Amino acid sequence: MIGGAGWLRESSPSYTTYVNFADKLSAMRPGDSLVETMGGLPDFSDAYREIIERNDPRALVALMDGMLALEVSEKELRAKCPFGKPD
Image (tube, rainbow, N blue to C red; front, side):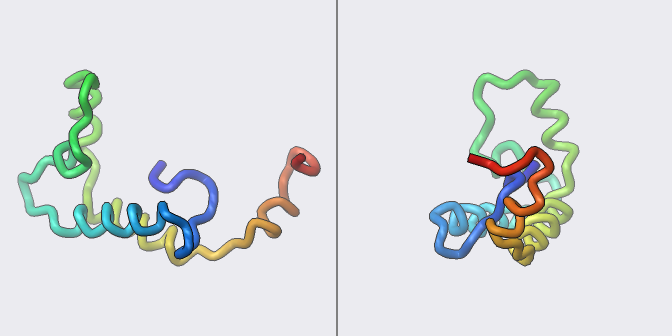
């Protein structure tokens, strides 16, 4: 899952990395390798690479844009925690 299960704020160092990655995906042309765009995946099997290559970069960018637009505060997430009060 791209972005994990948390929240991403513009003040986070990860935010810039996330946006830059989305820009790289947006710039892909038909026939470009998603694995290579991601920076390569050393030590992964060919089968795993094939699974990654099946993803549609445009769909991934749409997902990433949606996640950046999602605004749920940490307080809201913690209040709805199904496992009780987090430490």
